[in-house]
Image (cartoon, rainbow, N blue to C red):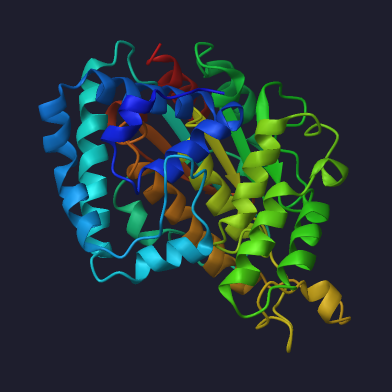
Length: 391
């Protein structure tokens, strides 16, 4: 566990302290890039002259003085849902968020200017499943104008394993393994089968974990105290009995899965939402050099269960599941775009990510990215070459 000296703690706005203490308390569960960032931010603030530090943080201090905030102290190790509610209800909350974002933007900009190593090139792949009712035109008409369509000569699904091997081989050996190649998938497809080095999370494979979460989430009563109690219980829930053998013993990935489901966005209920949100969180937190998103076909929503919050349709309605290819196309096509937008917002991915969009049963792919990343060659060699050019 990393510690912070008390003098620096006194210089920080009180709204910063609970979140910072929470991060430090779970230090060993953070990804390497998260640890590097927090350490860099704290070192920057520690080295900043007192006057400059005060000027940087003054807008946040002034807003805090005008807000009715919970009674946090230096020992607070997190923010409850009730406390968050009190913060968000303040009329000054929007201004507070802007000032906090401005502070960290200035700190991170300074850290980027000091970075000694060259950022790595990235590859993002989004694949739609076979069997969707695709029309004759481009699958992503808006995105098609920003890139080029590559003729593969065969269905994308048949070259998937080759592409994964090429990406794994092209990824840099500099970062830790968990920062290299990630695969997020809706169905048990194992796109990394036979390929070493992939960190894979699968919605279907995590069904036991999801059921454990849903059974507890459905016990929440309509008050914030009940929500806090349930959230705290889930934060302490031992996931080991529910995890795939490959995940057991990996405390960091267990924590990532837990926070992925607790953070919402439908990840605990819908496979394609899991892929999109899981990829977005992986890029934000672990910053892997390669992210592979395999979307799937979801079942149709069932009457009297699809509208119930946190409900497992299979448990609530005995009617057999029925695939919904048309709705899955709408969902997956849009969520794939959201993954690319999430990458574009992150400095480590912006302007250095080669994006590949494809459908498993189509013989072409859409390639978007820096001009030099799209220069000639087949898809496999172009993608691997882009990764290697940042070494």
